Length: 147
Image 1: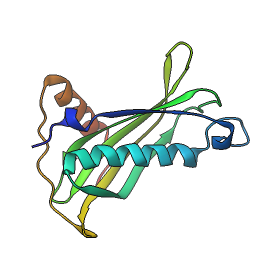
Image 2: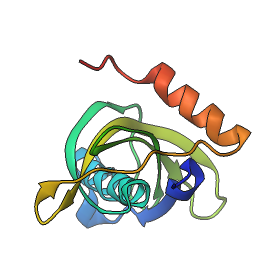
Image 3: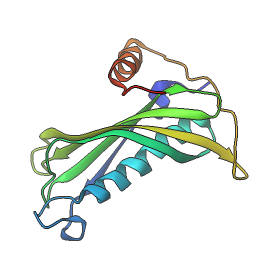
Image 4: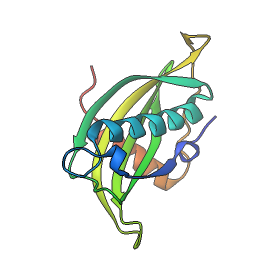
């Protein structure tokens, strides 16, 4: 049974001019691409299967990430369904010289495990230690209303 800690992934992308919008900061679509890719990796670790994006909600862009900064993308799975994995994704701007970070973007996403192109069951997600319990509770408490 996978643990929340097993699904925690952190990745960095250096914001280059080819990633930028007219305001010399990371284009929102590029940031969402990075979020989707890293979120899917967390989902795959939880599902122990390949996963596809089912939905992304509550994508909040709080501040830009300037060219030259790193986009620090962090995700973890916090809940599973029969064939789905819910993932929390957070992005920060990271100064490459000092390592200082500032939160920029966040989202919730649902991924579906697939085998041969069809939804397949996923294992339950084990909470693990106290930190994982806190992360899960925070994600559930702040998750947008689900129908």
